[in-house]
Every structure is written in C-alpha cells, then in structure tokens.
Image 1 (tube, rainbow, N blue to C red):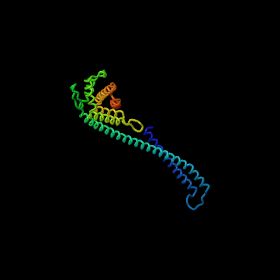
Image 2: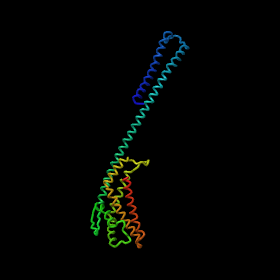
Image 3: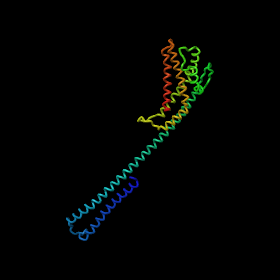
Length: 288
C-alpha cells in the first residue's frame, strides 16, 4: 500500500469513528426528546422503573455498540500510528548508526593514511644510511640506489646456476662483500623497519570486526593498498627481498658444503630466509 492510500485509509477510519460517536449522541438526544412527551424526566414525579429499564437497555445496547465500535476503530488507528512512529524511530536509529559507522570508517581511513605516510618517512630515513660497496664490480652506491641495484648485481655475480662447490677464493671474497652489506647494522635496521611497517599497515588495512569480517569495504582497501604500494614502492622491495633471500640461501649452502662449519651456523641464514618469505607473504596479502 502506498503512503497516499494508507493516509486515505487512516482518515476514513478516523472519520468513521467520529461518525459513529456522533450517531450515538444523536440517538440519545432523539430518544430523550421523544420520551419527554410521555414521561417526566425531571421533578418529583414517580419513576417507572420497568419503563426506565427498557429505555436504558435500548440505549445501552444500541448506542453502547456504536460507541464500542468507534472505540475499537480509534484504538486500531492509535496502534497503527504508534507502529508508524516506532518504524520511523527505527529508521532514524539506523540512519544514525550508519552515520556513526561512516564517521568511524572515515576516521580509520585518515588514520591509516597518516600511518602509511609516517612509516614511509621512517623507512626512507633508514634507507638513506645504506651503503653498498663492491670494488671488484665498481659498485659504490648509497641510499635507494643500493636497494635498486642490489638484486641486479647479486644475479650478475651469483646466477642461479652457480656451482657453489667450486666457489673460488675470488667468489668467496665477492660474496663476503654482499653478505657484509646484509649484515651491516644500517641494513638490518632498515630491514627491521621495513618488516614492522609492512605488518603494521597491512594489519590496519585488513583488520576485522568481532564477527571476523573485514571492516573496510573492497574499494577502500584497494585505495589504501595502492597508496601503500606507491609510497613504499613494494615492487622495488620485493626485488630487494628476493636478493637478500638469495644471498642467505647461498650462505646456507656454503655452510652445508663445509664440513668444518658449526651446525649452529645454519640457524641464522635459515632464520633470515624464513623472515624474507614472511615479508614477501605480507606484501602479497596486501596486494590481494
């Protein structure tokens, strides 16, 4: 039923109830007027109980029925109006809830955006301290250039088909320079900052509510993910992490090929390989 038809129906019910009440009043007035010609309604005259009872029963039966029906119609109309008020209040509460949710989402998006920019600045500060130097390859690069070229140079110096069992002293010396860059305190701080920032921003973008559902809608998540990938330059990071992982894999294999190496020596490269895989997995999750 449309609102216009519903409004007409309500007006019809209301005026029907008023008409029934008015009809009851008219009937009472008409009966009293007619009876006044035959009976004394006021004064000290004798009251005819049987006649009065009959008149009272008639008025009560007819007029009472009319007024009862009128009361039922008005009661029904009141319930209907109350139901509409409850529905309106429910819709208003829903709108308020949605407004609060939109405000919370907007606040969350602004907060995540600010965190992405802040973490990007922190990573850049650690990145500026990097220094990748391999004299035999004429490599002497600092800052973001060290990261950009590391994955390229490690592939040139140690391709995948390198026979590690025939590693010469020159190969070992060159490898030590690559490994030294990884073990440098500035490189380790940069990697730790990179790992923590990716985990933080990724967890914020993909955070869930109590029901295990993602809070942000797909469009908002994609926008924030794109912002993160742009500011962090995740494509460069992925290439860099693959380079670090490759160096640790070579180091692990060299330890295993050396019978004099301590079994404990394997733990560090294994741990770092696991760490590299974790970072790559975090980036992949954010990208998806």
